[in-house]
Length: 167
Image 1 (tube, rainbow, N blue to C red):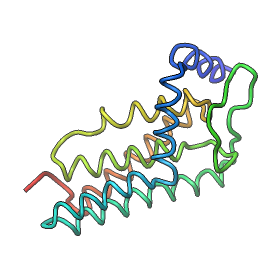
Image 2 (image 1 turned 180 degrees about the horizontal axis):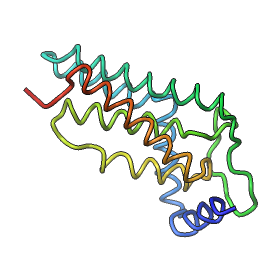
Image 3 (image 1 turned 45 degrees about the horizontal axis):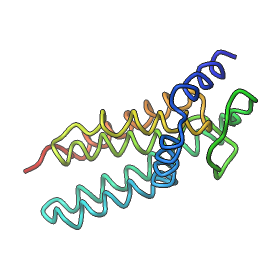
Image 4 (image 1 turned 90 degrees about the vertical axis):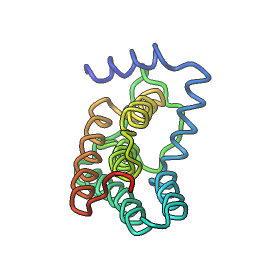
């Protein structure tokens, strides 16, 4: 399978002890979108003038995560299971498509970019997507689909609730 070969190649290039440690930290931060939700709550606490917008964005991140879980339960694609792929972290489910970490991270990056006035997507999304591959818990299409889902949902919410630019 081409995706297994690509996943094994990514691991061969990137999976070093320090990278695996960082990827595990990112995995724990992104689990159930908790870290991104907490970041939004901090935004709400600090930016009192736009507390409502930060809370909407935070809820949007959790909603994107929930959407990915619903899709996982419909698609039911199992996680990678091949001798060529090393798994470096436990997961709460055996389902792989789409990556919920990729979904919530991309939604957070899109939504919080609007509120901070800075494009956070390039800084946040690629490392999280790569981390899921380094850890061996997703196929490349899982992380791409998660990023598309999170980006679409984040973009819709950002536009709908006008979560744009710093005042």
